[in-house]
Image 1 (cartoon, rainbow, N blue to C red):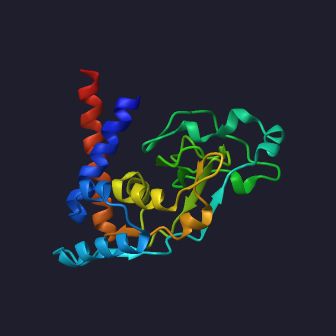
Image 2 (tube, rainbow, N blue to C red):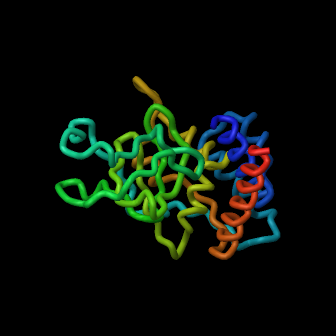
Image 3 (spheres, helix red, strand yellow):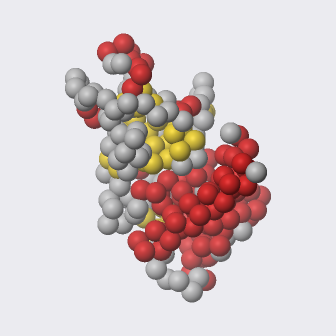
Length: 219
Protein backbone atom coordinates (compact mmCIF):
# COMPACT_ATOMS: atom_id res chain seq x y z
CA UNK A 1 0.00 0.00 0.00
CA UNK A 2 2.81 2.45 0.90
CA UNK A 3 4.57 1.74 -2.40
CA UNK A 4 1.38 2.52 -4.35
CA UNK A 5 0.88 5.69 -2.30
CA UNK A 6 4.37 6.88 -3.24
CA UNK A 7 3.74 6.06 -6.90
CA UNK A 8 0.54 8.12 -6.84
CA UNK A 9 2.31 11.05 -5.17
CA UNK A 10 4.95 10.91 -7.89
CA UNK A 11 2.28 10.82 -10.63
CA UNK A 12 0.54 13.86 -9.15
CA UNK A 13 3.82 15.74 -8.80
CA UNK A 14 4.74 15.03 -12.40
CA UNK A 15 1.39 16.38 -13.61
CA UNK A 16 1.70 19.58 -11.56
CA UNK A 17 5.33 20.16 -12.57
CA UNK A 18 4.27 20.16 -16.21
CA UNK A 19 1.26 22.41 -15.63
CA UNK A 20 2.95 25.13 -13.61
CA UNK A 21 6.49 24.67 -14.92
CA UNK A 22 7.87 24.61 -11.40
CA UNK A 23 10.74 22.23 -10.76
CA UNK A 24 9.88 20.06 -7.76
CA UNK A 25 13.53 20.03 -6.67
CA UNK A 26 13.50 23.82 -6.25
CA UNK A 27 10.95 23.62 -3.45
CA UNK A 28 12.80 20.72 -1.86
CA UNK A 29 16.05 22.65 -1.70
CA UNK A 30 14.90 26.04 -0.46
CA UNK A 31 14.01 27.15 3.02
CA UNK A 32 11.76 30.14 2.60
CA UNK A 33 8.67 31.73 4.02
CA UNK A 34 5.23 31.84 2.49
CA UNK A 35 5.65 35.32 0.98
CA UNK A 36 8.85 34.29 -0.80
CA UNK A 37 7.18 31.13 -2.06
CA UNK A 38 4.25 33.16 -3.38
CA UNK A 39 6.67 35.40 -5.27
CA UNK A 40 8.44 32.36 -6.74
CA UNK A 41 5.18 30.80 -7.91
CA UNK A 42 3.75 34.04 -9.26
CA UNK A 43 6.99 34.68 -11.15
CA UNK A 44 6.60 31.26 -12.76
CA UNK A 45 2.96 31.95 -13.59
CA UNK A 46 3.94 35.18 -15.33
CA UNK A 47 6.23 33.18 -17.61
CA UNK A 48 3.52 30.73 -18.62
CA UNK A 49 1.82 31.01 -21.98
CA UNK A 50 -1.46 30.15 -20.26
CA UNK A 51 -2.62 33.24 -18.38
CA UNK A 52 -5.79 31.50 -17.17
CA UNK A 53 -4.16 30.39 -13.92
CA UNK A 54 -5.02 32.34 -10.78
CA UNK A 55 -4.10 32.11 -7.11
CA UNK A 56 -7.18 31.68 -4.93
CA UNK A 57 -6.67 32.97 -1.41
CA UNK A 58 -10.24 32.19 -0.36
CA UNK A 59 -11.49 28.91 -1.80
CA UNK A 60 -13.95 27.73 0.86
CA UNK A 61 -16.37 29.11 3.44
CA UNK A 62 -16.85 25.68 5.00
CA UNK A 63 -13.83 24.02 6.55
CA UNK A 64 -14.71 22.03 9.64
CA UNK A 65 -12.84 19.54 11.80
CA UNK A 66 -14.54 16.35 12.92
CA UNK A 67 -16.01 14.85 16.08
CA UNK A 68 -14.18 15.27 19.38
CA UNK A 69 -13.08 12.18 21.32
CA UNK A 70 -15.65 12.94 24.03
CA UNK A 71 -18.44 12.57 21.45
CA UNK A 72 -17.47 9.13 20.20
CA UNK A 73 -19.56 7.24 22.76
CA UNK A 74 -22.62 9.05 21.39
CA UNK A 75 -22.33 7.58 17.88
CA UNK A 76 -21.98 4.19 16.23
CA UNK A 77 -18.23 4.11 15.54
CA UNK A 78 -18.75 1.65 12.69
CA UNK A 79 -19.70 4.78 10.76
CA UNK A 80 -16.61 6.82 11.66
CA UNK A 81 -13.80 7.78 9.27
CA UNK A 82 -10.44 8.54 10.90
CA UNK A 83 -7.27 10.07 9.54
CA UNK A 84 -5.61 6.67 9.24
CA UNK A 85 -8.33 5.68 6.72
CA UNK A 86 -7.40 8.46 4.29
CA UNK A 87 -5.06 7.56 1.43
CA UNK A 88 -4.05 9.42 -1.72
CA UNK A 89 -7.38 10.12 -3.43
CA UNK A 90 -8.92 7.14 -1.64
CA UNK A 91 -10.45 5.94 1.64
CA UNK A 92 -9.74 2.47 2.97
CA UNK A 93 -13.11 2.00 4.65
CA UNK A 94 -16.25 1.10 2.69
CA UNK A 95 -19.17 0.66 5.07
CA UNK A 96 -22.93 0.81 4.79
CA UNK A 97 -24.51 4.23 4.87
CA UNK A 98 -25.57 5.88 8.08
CA UNK A 99 -29.04 7.03 9.00
CA UNK A 100 -28.35 10.66 9.90
CA UNK A 101 -29.73 11.65 13.28
CA UNK A 102 -28.74 13.28 16.54
CA UNK A 103 -26.65 16.36 17.24
CA UNK A 104 -23.77 15.75 14.83
CA UNK A 105 -25.28 16.37 11.40
CA UNK A 106 -22.57 18.94 10.68
CA UNK A 107 -20.00 16.14 11.00
CA UNK A 108 -21.67 13.89 8.44
CA UNK A 109 -19.99 13.67 5.05
CA UNK A 110 -21.53 14.57 1.71
CA UNK A 111 -20.48 13.54 -1.79
CA UNK A 112 -17.62 15.74 -3.08
CA UNK A 113 -16.49 16.83 0.38
CA UNK A 114 -12.71 17.05 0.47
CA UNK A 115 -10.98 15.36 3.41
CA UNK A 116 -7.46 15.97 4.63
CA UNK A 117 -5.71 14.58 7.67
CA UNK A 118 -4.65 17.44 9.97
CA UNK A 119 -3.27 15.85 13.17
CA UNK A 120 -0.31 13.56 13.77
CA UNK A 121 0.28 13.58 10.05
CA UNK A 122 -0.77 16.36 7.71
CA UNK A 123 -2.17 14.83 4.54
CA UNK A 124 -2.96 13.01 2.38
CA UNK A 125 -6.23 14.24 0.92
CA UNK A 126 -9.16 12.59 -0.84
CA UNK A 127 -12.70 13.28 -2.04
CA UNK A 128 -15.85 11.70 -0.62
CA UNK A 129 -17.66 9.47 -3.11
CA UNK A 130 -21.24 8.24 -2.98
CA UNK A 131 -20.24 4.99 -1.21
CA UNK A 132 -18.62 6.92 1.65
CA UNK A 133 -21.11 9.77 2.13
CA UNK A 134 -23.25 9.82 5.26
CA UNK A 135 -20.30 8.77 7.42
CA UNK A 136 -19.03 10.67 10.45
CA UNK A 137 -15.44 11.88 10.55
CA UNK A 138 -13.01 12.30 13.45
CA UNK A 139 -11.25 15.47 14.59
CA UNK A 140 -7.92 14.45 13.05
CA UNK A 141 -9.61 15.23 9.71
CA UNK A 142 -10.74 18.53 8.18
CA UNK A 143 -13.66 18.56 5.78
CA UNK A 144 -13.58 21.15 3.01
CA UNK A 145 -16.54 22.21 0.88
CA UNK A 146 -15.69 24.44 -2.05
CA UNK A 147 -17.35 26.86 -4.39
CA UNK A 148 -17.68 24.74 -7.53
CA UNK A 149 -17.70 27.88 -9.67
CA UNK A 150 -14.03 28.37 -8.81
CA UNK A 151 -12.49 25.01 -8.08
CA UNK A 152 -13.42 21.36 -8.66
CA UNK A 153 -13.20 19.22 -5.49
CA UNK A 154 -11.17 16.50 -7.21
CA UNK A 155 -8.70 19.08 -8.50
CA UNK A 156 -8.30 20.70 -5.09
CA UNK A 157 -7.65 17.32 -3.48
CA UNK A 158 -4.98 16.57 -6.10
CA UNK A 159 -3.44 19.99 -5.47
CA UNK A 160 -3.27 19.31 -1.70
CA UNK A 161 -1.51 16.01 -2.48
CA UNK A 162 0.95 17.68 -4.87
CA UNK A 163 4.41 18.95 -3.97
CA UNK A 164 3.12 22.54 -4.20
CA UNK A 165 0.22 21.93 -1.83
CA UNK A 166 2.42 19.96 0.56
CA UNK A 167 4.99 22.75 0.59
CA UNK A 168 2.34 25.25 1.67
CA UNK A 169 0.98 22.79 4.24
CA UNK A 170 4.47 22.28 5.66
CA UNK A 171 4.89 26.05 5.99
CA UNK A 172 1.63 26.29 7.94
CA UNK A 173 2.25 23.15 10.01
CA UNK A 174 2.73 23.46 13.78
CA UNK A 175 4.24 21.05 16.29
CA UNK A 176 3.23 20.63 19.91
CA UNK A 177 2.78 17.10 21.21
CA UNK A 178 2.21 16.18 17.54
CA UNK A 179 2.24 17.77 14.10
CA UNK A 180 -0.99 19.57 13.19
CA UNK A 181 -2.40 22.31 11.02
CA UNK A 182 -5.05 24.79 12.15
CA UNK A 183 -8.36 25.21 10.34
CA UNK A 184 -7.58 28.94 10.06
CA UNK A 185 -4.35 28.07 8.24
CA UNK A 186 -6.21 25.83 5.80
CA UNK A 187 -8.61 28.68 5.11
CA UNK A 188 -5.68 30.87 4.05
CA UNK A 189 -3.87 28.29 1.93
CA UNK A 190 -3.10 29.73 -1.53
CA UNK A 191 -4.55 27.52 -4.27
CA UNK A 192 -3.25 27.70 -7.85
CA UNK A 193 -6.26 27.20 -10.09
CA UNK A 194 -6.48 26.87 -13.87
CA UNK A 195 -9.87 27.45 -15.50
CA UNK A 196 -12.48 24.78 -14.73
CA UNK A 197 -12.07 22.98 -18.05
CA UNK A 198 -8.34 22.60 -17.46
CA UNK A 199 -8.96 21.44 -13.90
CA UNK A 200 -11.10 18.60 -15.29
CA UNK A 201 -8.33 17.67 -17.72
CA UNK A 202 -5.89 17.41 -14.81
CA UNK A 203 -8.31 15.18 -12.88
CA UNK A 204 -8.79 12.95 -15.95
CA UNK A 205 -5.02 12.79 -16.51
CA UNK A 206 -4.52 11.60 -12.95
CA UNK A 207 -7.12 8.84 -13.27
CA UNK A 208 -5.50 7.61 -16.48
CA UNK A 209 -2.10 7.53 -14.75
CA UNK A 210 -3.60 5.84 -11.68
CA UNK A 211 -5.27 3.12 -13.75
CA UNK A 212 -2.00 2.43 -15.59
CA UNK A 213 -0.12 2.19 -12.28
CA UNK A 214 -2.69 -0.20 -10.82
CA UNK A 215 -2.56 -2.46 -13.87
CA UNK A 216 1.25 -2.52 -13.77
CA UNK A 217 1.29 -3.30 -10.04
CA UNK A 218 -0.96 -6.33 -10.68
CA UNK A 219 1.42 -7.80 -13.27
